Image (cartoon, rainbow, N blue to C red; front, side, top):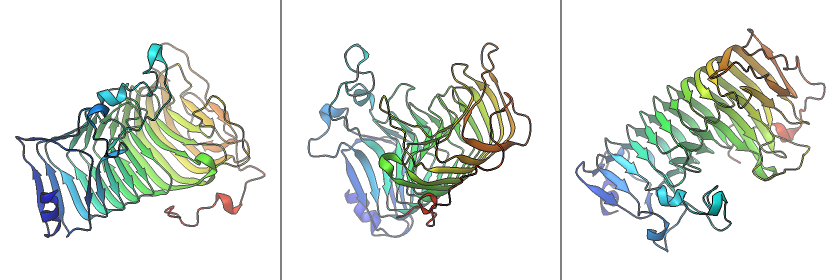
Length: 382
């Protein structure tokens, strides 16, 4: 902290974690504002205390390293940020980690490794992050984020270990990175716009997700999201949009292009019935999903699920879905699962494999123009 404070007060300063050192540090907030051009260069190893029993009682169990109110800051280096996550994953309140594969009740807070909060003009480059107790990297309320050449590595069965999560954040580029983990490779929450993802390899993981959105009848606005030139392998999902019933707002201007799938369940998925309980009640409103393009998506799918699944809301249809050059074959066997569509409107510009005969043409008669589905403030800051 002394090094951070000294660097914060000087333009273009660097805080160096030397390559021959390992630093174990407790939950820490690195506050701004600082002078422009601050660099945190991790050439050695940073790690938190080893598991919940070693976590200081007074420290937050929800976050480890927090960067707050910073502008023009860079996190880089040739070192490793190690999360020591195993003892957190094994807590009996985690899914199926209790006796005989049960999930016990109780507080289950686990720390996000790295969180950027209310910051702008950020660069994260070349760093390796591994074994996070929960999310690896979160951006909340940020603007202007560049992530490149990032390596995230955590076991396939580690629970809730999203790679990169962004929420209420706009103008984001994620490039040329490799992510393997136990949950979403990249997840995009409410209030995000102008996000460009290119050259990312995911897997094993739960794929690239927009959502979940609209929980507890909330408004969610997500727009102008592009994912291109990506590889998703050995994953539970490919590219997914997931919303709860009862939300409002919209998801619009979404493009998935040039994506290679390798043995992926649920390759292309819109799920407007997302639910973590056994039964969620049908509701009359939903986040409005529109203007979604799937172009040149090819590869193989796990035959346990249909490769294309559009489950749109009963009351608020998905509209203007475009499919072009989609070719998905079974990874093993010859079962060609029929695509599933419910209340989904769109077009096939070219014949898809498997063929999608279930998209409805045109627009629904009762397309809503209600203000509850509009997002006049496109960046989602309410």
